[in-house]
Amino acid sequence: MLILVINCGSSSVKYNLIDTSEEKNLCRGLVERIGAVTSIVKHEPEGGRHTKNTRTIANHSEALQEIMNYLLDTENKIISSPSDIEAVGHRVVHGGEMFKDSVLIDEDVLAAIEQAFDLAPLHNPPNLRGIQAAKKNLPDIPHVAVFDTAFHHSLPNKAFLYGIPNRLYRRYKIRKYGFHGTSHYFVSRQYYKKTGKKAGNTKLITCHLGNGASITAIDGGKSIDTSMGFTPLSGLVMGTRSGDLDPSILFYLIEKEELSLANVHALLNRHSGLLGLSGYASDMRDLIEEASNGDRRCQQAIDVFCYKIKQYIGSYIASMNGCDAIIFTAGIGENSPLIRKRSLEEMSYLGIEVDDTKNDSPDRGAIQKISTDNSKTEVYVIPTNEELVIAIDTAKIAQASDQSPWV
Ligand code: ADP
Image (cartoon, rainbow, N blue to C red; front, side, top):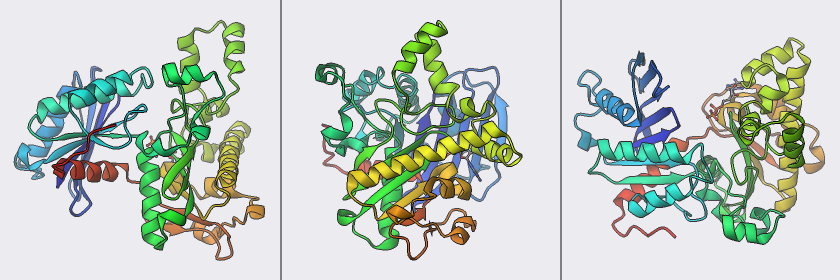
């Protein structure tokens, strides 16, 4: 099936046109700075000429129109009619407690995504705008929502409850939800496929290390714990997000620096993490370069980043009472031998041994085993493909006449 996958941010729309029968990407692109005087529009057809233009795009609906115009342009020869697209898959960040799986979007689903605005104020409102814009442009085909939180629905109570009064969970649903679910799901399934191991008796730790970063413990094919929590702010140190903090720091800061709640929110989400620690950059490539030139703060930022990863891996080995394989994925996880090595160093007590030659050899885009043959726990690099998961789920749901209702 030909599926259009849409991922909307507050001022951006990313898209992929995917043929699920061949699991092949036909075209991808991005409209960013929506609403600004000049928006940037990029299109990257597979095997074709990549383009980058600027123009004014006022809202998400115009962005979708721009994408459709490009795909339909006879010169680009990507599709010849809007009806070539059989369904649209939408990435939705927060599904709350309601969505255990991807679902066909109807009025009730739209209302439920809106109800989760409180839980993900930065993500769910633009996700909903994207759905509305895409429905306007492609009204006659199924639209499916695929949630970042859904794969973590299997977390047991002891992993998702916080140590606060239980009534707060009951009243406000304050609990750990977890994110990056499609990525953790995808790389775990790639591992089972590659090794022939059965999900049922395999214990995995998947490390999604991009600008946002999270680690998940997967036992018997199910997520049993994950580092992000109520929001994507907790867990690992990230590009600009703090990760785990002692909550008292907030009270202290509000008092000392007379910060408003909005200031604290911005401080922890946009000015912390690698950027805050280094005072230089949030991008790992820049940090590695400056650290190699001797910059102490960049070196420290990398130290903290890797130490947190190591701690989470250790704790998840304890949670699962073992681990068959650790998997690295996303921008940093797939591309940085240094970060992989530093995150796993001095773990021979747990039987983890990285093969330096394999870790250093660049085989971009391939699934690679980078542990030694003696390592008790395997270590893999597996490229993620969240868009493909969204496309395949969308195709399945669009095809199923007996679509199961959401719970
Ligand atoms: P996002 O969360 O935005 O999808 P990505 O998965 O694209 O992020 O990851 C972006 C991160 O990957 C950036 O910090 C970038 O510096 C890092 N990265 C990409 N290539 C490399 C590399 N070769 N070495 C180290 N870090 C890299």
